[in-house]
Amino acid sequence: MNICILGWYGTETLGDRAIIEGIIKIFDSIEKNDISIGSLYPFFTERTLIEEQEALNIMGITSNIYCFDVLNSKTLKKQIETSDLVIMGGGPLMDLSELDIIDKSFQYAKKRKIHTGIIGCGIGPLNKPEFRRSVYNILINSDISIFRDTNSLSEAQILNNQFGNRIDETTLYASNDPAIIPIGFFKCENNVKDRLVVNFRDLGFQTDNSLLTIVDNKLISLLKNMSNQFKEIVLLPNHIFSIGGDDRFYFSKLKQELMDYENIVVIHKPLSLFQTFEIIKNSKAAIGMRYHSIVFQSYLNGNNYILDYTEKKKGKIISFLNDNDPNEFFADRYYSLIDLNKGIEFKITKDIFEYDNKIFEKTLEFYVSIIKRNIY
Picture 1 (cartoon, rainbow, N blue to C red):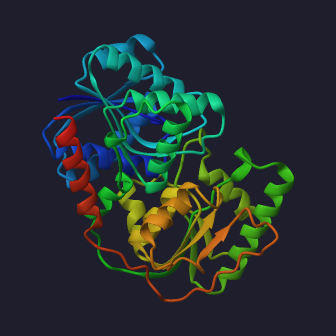
Picture 2: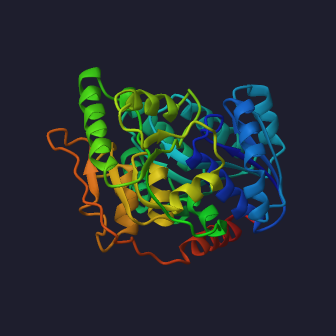
């Protein structure tokens, strides 16, 4: 089958790398495919595919994979025309002008009677009326929609009620983020070090300067407090491209305020997904802020703590916790950065987050079964 994957590729975070590898594995588990990835910056996605070749091999992927320039309308149309299936592959359906690419691509695919699907996406933040309408249109033109959490499924149903009930809700499903699928194929030696692994995110993209300074100071204070509890604190990037916010720039900015703390170090060297997994797994504890860093830390480390910069009631981080933490393990390991009046205090323990160790396999099987039933 020829499959065209659209999304926010070309600015891949490590989370996006995990998503695309998980989605490719889903379809590769059904049959060998020719998979094209629409990229906003093809050179970056090509580099991603090269750096992730080892992981793709470990996962047993045999499909042919290449990328194309999604901003070239002629190229995009040709890719759609030669595809058997066009999907939005992971990531959020949110307030972004590039959402128009997905909307128009799905419309074009349906006119040509080509199958379409939403695979492993979230919904939100979605506040502007024009983008809400656009996501509604995408869902109308999708043969199947499998969301990464139950909150996104609920949001799809709210959109349906808001705009006219033209979405067939029997085609809507909720599962886990396909980004967790590669975790099930990852293996490394057990060599835990006296190390705290940390991922923060620069909130300059959504916060004014005065509030940003408050957040920065809170994070610096947190690192200072943690520095005497671990032999080493590693600031581990989840993104290494300027578009989308290269974490290394922000980490270096924080490090400038921590020059006297020699055990706090920044990882500057680009790492593959599995190399990053190994550092997370072989650390005593972890603190995460970016959504996928929290997902990875929860399953690979388990002694992790959460800084949430998203909406407290329906953001992607709380949606992940609502679906995956029924026993509220993270209740006292969670801090909302919206609560700027509170200091960040985490009491490091040896407790570990417990989960069904077959979740990665079950997630893969769920996606495969739903797609086979509805598409193949």
